[in-house]
Length: 500
Image (cartoon, rainbow, N blue to C red; front, top):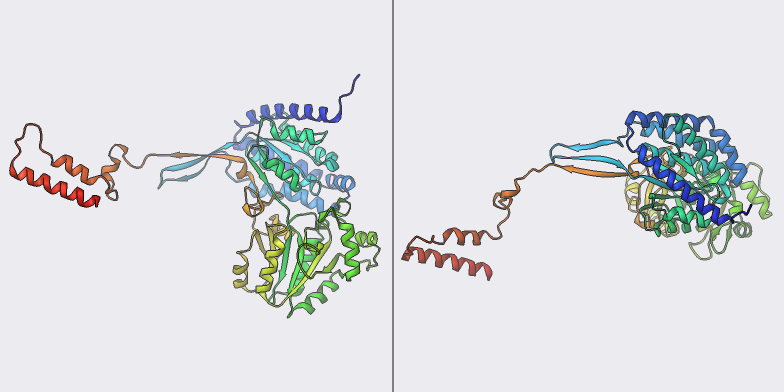
């Protein structure tokens, strides 16, 4: 039997999945709130049951991150997310304004395409599937080639759970032969209504170039500013906890620490006490040669790796308890590799004189991950207000970037797709959720009588003189006398005066 090449098989699979996905989308569009909730509960239960197994498979397949942290991300994307969105209105009338005589009606978009990254391959599947079905949509997933096994495993178990609870067959599906040709077929499939792209810049750009509505998210490069009024010990603990959470694979994780001259010594002392290792210039150079290739693109071999693993590969000796590697930097951009995004356990370190310098430096750093996230550690509300103007869609205060940006430790919506706004070329600046996968129809009752709209509007004065002319002119059967002529002359004078 002749075997077709991989690209052809991938394209054919993409066509089959989108056809079946569209059929499922058409069916689930008629489901009630009760039916959808039963399906989500079943998915949540399945994701919780296999949270550890999926995390283990993801770490084994990609080499990125830590099993326990990936397990918690699976938990956040299922259990915590369900509790947050279970009462959210996504069906029928979702909002009403009696005073204006309007109400909003939610409709599903149809078949959603979810592009899944290798850094968070199972939690992102769970998250996107949950918000898609909450909004009565079907979803087809395109995995990263290095994480296809765990991504498809997560998709299949969620699909089984959803179907067991009454969802249509193939409501959640996943490409098993991921190629550029197959993904391109999904991006341009007529059955796909909306794309949610989480991944590298190239994939996000492809989503926006597909000609379809897309929600794409860009890279992060979050600076963490420890301002002079901050509790240094607490700030450092939060930064370390965030940067080591799944070994820094969340794009909202801190990439640089900024402190001031007045608290520099205490920040350095606390970082060292809590597992930070300050590298020399030579050691920093060795680590940078490992982390980056082709300029400042992250080397996948060292994404989500423990600090000790990176240090050993670089040939530098660090204490066994080292949690993060820290490299002092004298600038931003060309020649300062650590000023770019590092989805691993390495941080850049900067010292400034005051908040104004911290402000300027933050803006410079954010240019390499603009629109995403930045963190502040401060007890001065005025500083928070000043930094709220920075080009980041999430300004996090006194919390870790990884947990805060995703909504796990803050009041932000729980999400594994974080919009960057127009700053970062994204169509959304929020944490993406069910509401972004809906078409919202507006129903509006008439409040004004259209047959007398102009006459009834006291603020509309244009044309009133012409109306006066019409009403002032004599009728056909009336004899024009001197008084009529004088009235007509006065009207004409008024018109001429208004024209001048």
